[in-house]
Length: 121
Image (tube, rainbow, N blue to C red; front, top):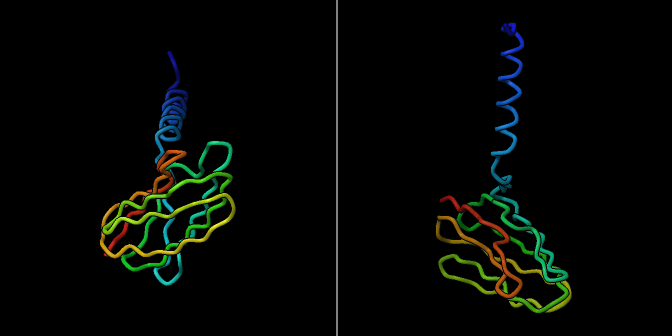
């Protein structure tokens, strides 16, 4: 028969393994008085980051610093939608979301959702 302490240790190890695998991507919270900075890199046919979540408030400044080795368009699916034209080199775009909700920032040509920004009132 297995001692109770061994069973408890095995159960805890199993729970830790499950919770470690089921974590959501980190959410980067912004201070409403400071801009949120999103660093985007487009190189060798790939974009990074992918799927990062951010939290912002309505009207908070969001800055995209983009370094790219190719042409692309970044689309911000907000109200209203915005498009940022990217050419090879380094670019800085600044915007604010004025309608609460969840908005996504996507690469149009290289592909992928770079970030999701949850905007609170």
